[in-house]
Image (cartoon, rainbow, N blue to C red; front, side, top):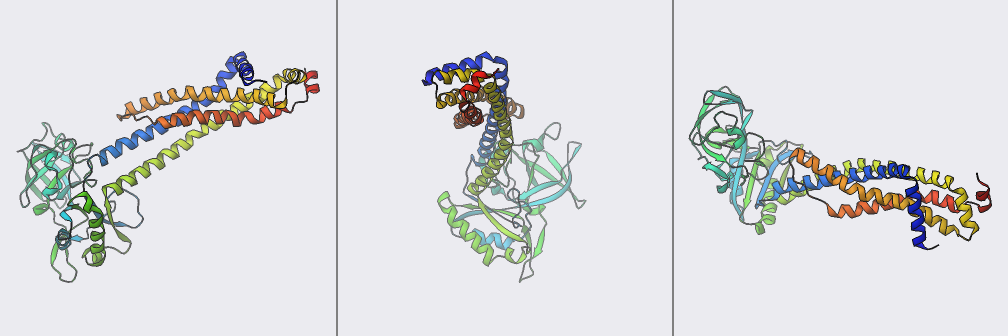
Length: 418
């Protein structure tokens, strides 16, 4: 039997049972749509997150001491182990342009204009933490001055919103109140040496307040070997002179921390140094998002399995209903392969139609979800081809046994079948 004739007969069989074929195809539509939706959302999330983190690549190297094998973002579980002596020594390493410390000042609240809002902490750092272009208004603070820089969400905690030149009162966790002047307001796309440690310096919804380490940061320790009291920080950003210098600087920083630093003597036994670049962190984020997407997509694949069972069930019913037709076909000269081809084509068409219809449904679902959460949509076009191939494969696999069963039907028994 010619392929075209088999295709015509298969299509006729599908059309003769419109409702049954539609419900069977619907299972594949739902399965493919679910896969396309989750893959598209995963791709969009990856593009959105990596676009924010990696859009402005900098020659930064992020350093902290955290629990070995601990999950979490940069600086997770960081302990204050880097002394002022370590910072000065790191600045003298070949290829290093700047070393920017970062510490946390515990606070209870911030007051301005007669209004007080809760604020658990402010970030103490140096002026070089900020990119010169990161300010919507004002400038970086100066060391030794009672000055602060705020991002837009922090400014909007107050009514009217904080602006450059206003005074705020920081109520420290120790009970002390310190008055400071707002000298800088970060724009929404602010960046700088803070890099991933300061992700969302200006963007995002988290209110952030930045102060100079002097005079606000007061976490100190007696330096090992000398007993000299020095400030000690949990995280550092080492800025290389250029991108080409990053690999060498990374190795030299790690070697210093491991062999010569005060931090090596202060770090807890179960902790380890983390020395990572922008690219390292981007790769980790990409792997995390891919793992999450694959997990959710794997759950969606269950819908395809259910759809394939539906196709197999319908094809078995179709074989039973058309037993006499099979007998007549064989009586007039049809071979087993012709019968096999006929039913296999019918199952494949059901899978193909389900996949083709499932793609736009999945894209629509992903679009609605992306709009709801305010995320740009990135279409993974290669997955559309994969979806069609999977739909065809599901049809072939689901129809294989029913088609084989039909091909093995004895023509004499089939002709006697009522």
